[in-house]
Image 1 (cartoon, one colour):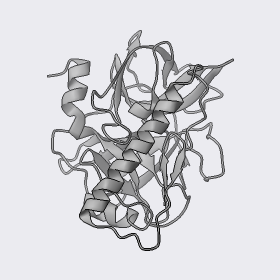
Image 2 (cartoon, rainbow, N blue to C red):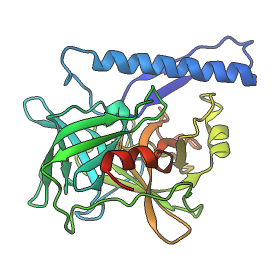
Image 3 (cartoon, helix red, strand yellow):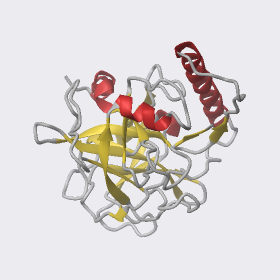
Length: 294
C-alpha cells in the first residue's frame, strides 16, 4: 500500500499475504500510519535549512486556468531562496488572516500572496503580505487536525481581485449535486509534471465519508478521521497545493469554504480515488478564536 501527503513524500507499507483487517487491526494500522507520517513531517521541519523544501506534488487533473478575480480568496505561500518560491496554498479568511495546512509549516517572514494567477508574471493586482504569526491547530498530528491560521501584515485590501472566503456554519454540509465543489491551486496537470505556474481549478463532487472509505479501501485502509472531508470525480482528481481551498455549494444557496487540502492519491488518473481535505466547519471554533470572531 502506498500513502502520500499533498505536500510531498510517500510511504510504502508492505503487508503479508495472510494479513487480514478486523476493526482492531484497522485502528492499529491507522494509528501506525499517522505516527509514520508525523515522524516524516518532523524530520522535514527539523532540517537546519528550513527552506530546503520541494515543491508541493499536488495535481489537478483536467484543471482549467483561472482568470484574475475568479478566486479572490486564493493565496500562494512563498519562501525566499534566491527568489520567492511557491510551496503551498491558502485561503483568505479576513484582512489579516489566512487558513492553510499544518503540514505546510510556514514561518514568520515568508509571504502570503493574493491577487495572482501566473506565478512568474504577477500583475498590478497582486498583494504580497508578510506572515507575522503562525498558529497550527493545538492538536495537529500527522493527518489529524491538519490546519493552521496565519496572521499577515499589512492587511489585505479587498477589491475585485482579493477578498475572503465565507465560512460555513457548524454542521453545515456541501450540496450533493454534481460538480458542487471547486478546488483550485498551482498543482500540475499530470503526476510526472512539476508545479504549474498558472492557477488551475476543477469542479468536483462531494463524497460522503462512508463512500470515501470504500473508494480508498483497495489502496489504503484506515479510519477516516471525523475532521476530514472527501471530494473527487471518477476520471481521477488529485489535490492542488496543500492548504488550498475547497469551495462548495450548500443547500441554502450559498458557497462556502468547506475544505483545506490535506492529502490525496499517489497515482494520477486512476478512477475512484478521492482527495481528502481538512473539514473546515469542524475547525470553526479554532479558526474564529484566531481571527477574533464571535
